Image (cartoon, rainbow, N blue to C red):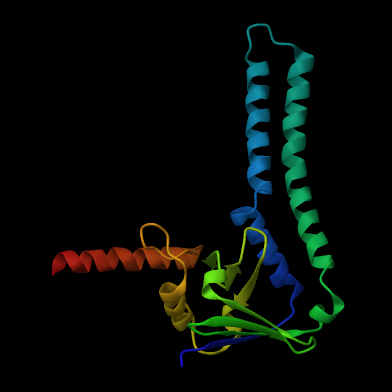
Length: 200
């Protein structure tokens, strides 16, 4: 039976990368801060170039815009650090085992009793990066698999299982997104396949 098995020792850096990925690609905080920054920028520009500019208003507008830009990184870093700090001691000392088949995902820890089981229908979307598979169960809940920690199966097999078993959108496409170099390689492969099809 086709199966993927990964063994991952808790790594604070990996968890931070997961939460930062979530903030920038799945969360609403960055988008909200971006909208606020754009609004503040246009207000500052309007105050600067009005027919009878008020120096005090102009200075205040640009200060507020600068504060929004300065606060954004601080808020994001603080939020991620707080989430990571809340990880339990048991989990920080654990090695996580994830098994993936065409039927289900099974998640266990060597320092904790019990196991988590979910099916492909429980998955909202899978996001593949150069180093990870981020598996979202909702907008705020998920897990990840470190590609380098796969000890049975392969990344190619994981993608094959995902393409076959993930929920599909209205156009029949799996809820699967690629980022970074993975996305660039995939686009290049698709472009090459189209050229090959045209040549036949």
